[in-house]
Length: 195
Image 1 (cartoon, rainbow, N blue to C red):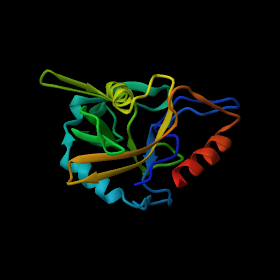
Image 2: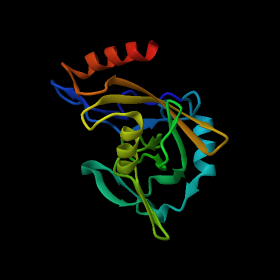
Image 3: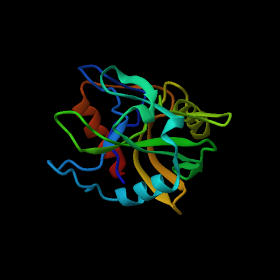
């Protein structure tokens, strides 16, 4: 499944407005029902169900200001999942990744379902503490990247119900990249995916 471009992006600077990752992808945009129309979302949803964990054990930011709270405190949260077999471009990361399926309640998008994968999502249960922030730190190491590296993930797939595979592009292994605006970044990054 293709995810929203720049929703999992690191090391890019937008000079003219915006550019902050949305940390999520909507699974349908067709009002008023918001059916699941994104190609490949079925395998992601099946994998999320297979790897689901109790909402009481997951925390995430939602709403204006990104207030972090337990997922079960948010009416929007429906499924939380911890994938323990995670790969980026075929490289096993060796650290779990957490995703949450939400049903938006905002006036503009009531009923739209999205998958959230913020770096602030965390899981804690029975002495185990996991976070997506740690996942991205380890992923950088495994991919030979540093904190400044410009890279982004543009696709996720699930295989065998428990393997999460990401496809990523490294734009600049050493340094962050600067773009005039989000449209310029999008144009450049789409050309890199097509290669």
